[in-house]
Image (cartoon, rainbow, N blue to C red; front, top):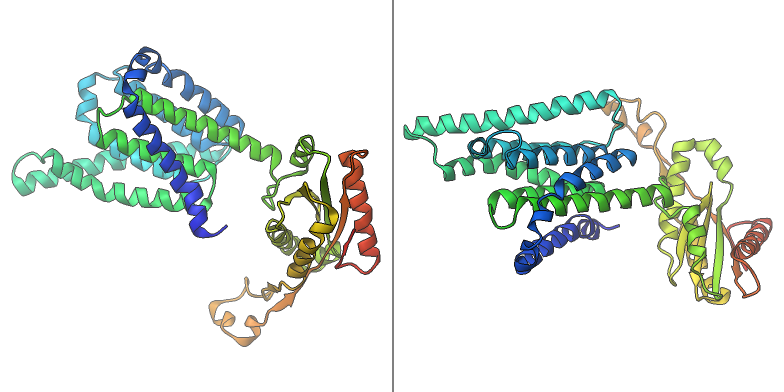
Length: 397
């Protein structure tokens, strides 16, 4: 996926949806005001559910954030300290919270019962120390400069620098990692900033409830990916193929794709290069035209389903795929490159690289009303066997 489109999907779309929610909430204020007694209680139910579900699906970062937001909601509503103290510590709490969101944006999900949990807890404490120390230093600097208490506007200006850097880091990681979890963390920052810089525009309980629902949606999406996505190639898995087959009508075609001599290639160049080849072929196959949907069937085998297409119409499309894969050069780095020094890498011997190619064979079958999906798959597999028997690197229907 291109960087611009990836940025749009994983950063700007979630941000846009959040803005739409805020605008809609302000527009329909008379409606949700009647539900405020219920909305005020929602964070205390939604956040614990989100924290527990996040742990079940290895989303520890969202679990920590949901727990911290729950504590913050209790803090703001005066359940932990007196309400006056929440006003006195508004700036350091805001800065500490921004640093915490940044911490989880740049870190990775880890198992809860591991040494990483202790490191995370220590990092959380460090964020609070930095947040309170920074605001204290800025306050003292203002006193020395003006010989009076630092004004609220000056303190806000002092906070702009770390908040700006933190926001840039969060946006960068949301685009770079391109995942729903990182986009959700970016939405958390957006809500956090909105609540601080636009106080009183919307109730905290409403914003936190919306954020908790966003967490739940991200967790459900993550669970779907775990069940129906192949981790290595990013394609839909065989389980997704079987599920999709239930929705097919009586007119479609199936193509079975296999990488030629993959086992020999894997044994020669190693599993790391083999994984690279699988991702490469998967990327090429995912660009198929004609409405084809690509699945990783297993090992080095892939399946492409073309709804409402006959075999004859998709043969040119598959032939183009076969040609693109066979003409793509895979550059292998010199084996000594990783072990060598920078001076050695500059030498001609280290820069010598080997270029290899892989080919694919494709078998095609068209579905008819008297067959099942599995029978059509078997026919495509038989056609694939014929393609390999006839010399490989070809399409057979």
